[in-house]
Image (cartoon, rainbow, N blue to C red; front, side, top):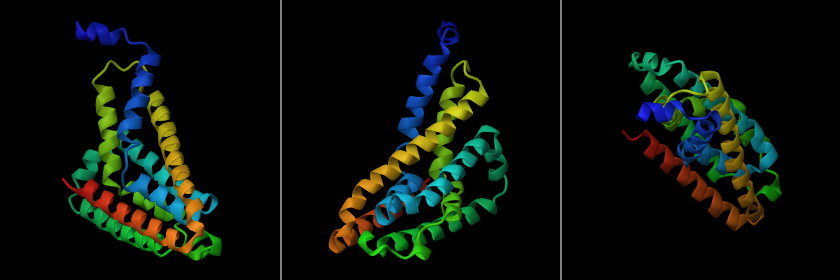
Length: 206
């Protein structure tokens, strides 16, 4: 009976369900999304685009890895997971320090201190929440009769990854308006840096 109902699902219905699941699960706060917001708040929109592009492409890479089932292969290499986790933690702490010590936007900031594309990509591929969230969305989709097909699901989820991170970046730039004032800048940057470390610690918890 349930199979008959699922088999009658229209493509737009499964598409809507996939978009809603991705919005709720992948769009929730995590190391990548919070870092994009924090970088946008600390450095402004244009200087943050390279870092955000790195996070987006890294998350898309995680999407592909999950889709083709390479997570099991990575899990079979016990020495690799701790290495990625340590590298991610080190970079997140470094990024949190950069955000916490970023000068007010009115001062222009040090270009050398701005997070890079490579840094964003590295954080994304070592982000434990990305694997869990994308895996959860795929598991939910797999429980239904697949009307869309794998290529369509990949394209939809890749588009959602871009949209989600753009929204978080734009949210950060809203705070940037407050960062012209040195005291407000320091307070907001410290809050974002602490939130980044906290969300990362929560995501890494078993």
